Length: 245
Image (cartoon, rainbow, N blue to C red; front, side, top):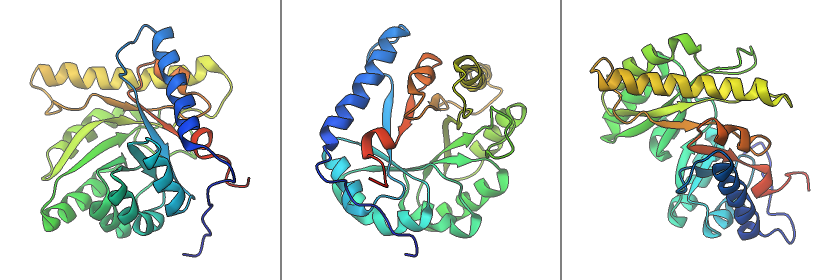
């Protein structure tokens, strides 16, 4: 692999950092009136080597997120052996979709029907089902991937109609800002999309019986995301450490 992957920092304690992250989630749930461990922690292991990724799983992480499919190909066997669930949280080029189908439990970054159709065809060939999420660009930033909010429900409905794919929810990358109100407005927009999907599903207008997950929030803003209804937060640095350490 051309890109050198980082190893566990000396003396780093994954069990301790996982406990700290979980405590932040529990505190955020309590502060927003949510109880019962509704929010799942996904540990982003991009740019960490297989030994580090496996170590965090053995320390208690049940879901890991990989952004680079070439890395996923290398690390997946070890992660599987350790018992991890693997989510793809980076963009999927159609020529590398086979890797996602081969190794992932969920692809969170479906933002076009063309990509979904590619995943569906590959799943049919592999005789397997795949969970997917619709990535939505709630901030409107050109640098961020995702379908426009106004198009999210139509895309979700079209994807759910494809063989072998199950839409389980919606994902976004929040606005890169210290402005809490601005960031939370984006997360609230994603929650509104999810809620509208459920309402239309109950009316029989959308085939989205399982689209209730909201994957949003990272190390720097997970409390804001939880307050706005996140069910999955994607945490990297605060659990794994700094890659340049």
